[in-house]
Length: 507
Image (cartoon, rainbow, N blue to C red; front, side, top):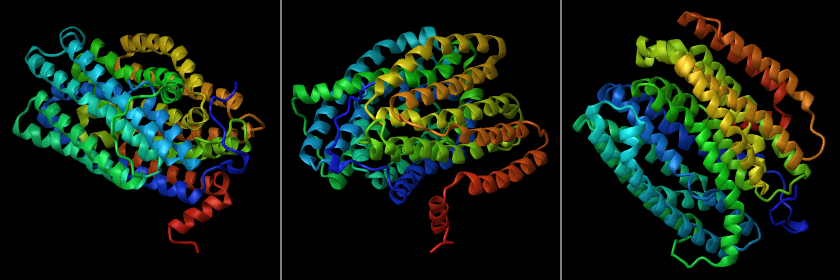
């Protein structure tokens, strides 16, 4: 499949991303996610207790809808990273900023259309789709209308994030993310202590979305020299954005649906309080993927100009997949081993009894999903988004069928199994597609056999203990053993040296 991306001159051909800058960017991306996560862990028990399971269950659905609605940007948010990064690599800052302004104009328009559509659908969602107690009807309807108002600001912020990422301004962007993310947890708790209504919580969220948009605008002005002044979209720029963006939008439409569909379907099949037993471990396990996600966010702008089939692209995929395995397997292992005692300590015995099996299954699924991010990111960065789009479209009907059948027969644990199964099959398919279309050439697949066997063994052992003390012992011993294995067999000499330097043990 030919690459759709314009090539840089041979004299300016980019190499694979350098380790020091990659680690620095990854560190800022990590900080931007881990700070809100820690705040959320501390706040969540009090928020659930204050709201009750019915209100909290609906609030999780609102958060899901915000996350899914934000992908109706026709791929422009993601395309901006690639196109702006390419122009900056060629020294064309004026052209990069023109593309960014055109992209933001389209994003603002898409946001207004989405807001109108969402407002019109609010009554139907509240009356016909979600299984809500009668007393929450008015609150839920008001919350949905306020949610619609936030969508234009969500869309525009997506564009600013693309511009900042293309300029590799991860420091400032993640300081803002850390502050805003922390306030998004603390604010609803304070509001709930004052007035325990869902619409009041969503009104606070709306204010935060507006403020976030303004802050990102100021950050882009100061760190990138970019100011958004509306322009009339020209045909060449529109074609460039929408050609790539069209396929990315298909993938962006279907991929989050594959991610969010489990919780949305639960809202229609089971009482809304059961969504809380599923969504809480889902969110917690999902946030554990912050290290892999931070790594991939750092890599995307750096590999956006790599030529498909080159040695650099192949090395980038293999190296990234190996590093993702090193950081994702220990996280999944800890969640599997400590699911029951951890949830019991955090949210109580009754909550842990329902949610612990869900957390164990989802932890494996999230790990498989993270491993697939290496080839998936390389495919999109190489200008081949239709590969991912067609794969996600093909997966959707099978995932819907699996979700429906397994949820009806096994409840929320069946839902978790369907999500984990999809992640595993998706990862395998993406590896095959990346090998064929992007990272062409010899890849030593045999090197994955031993790490894969170690991963299966560790996760199997983590399922065994029942008592809290046994679970903790297995977690500690397993992490130490994997750390030794990874240091000796998985990390390269330059990576070990860099880690030692960061830890203060090297020159």
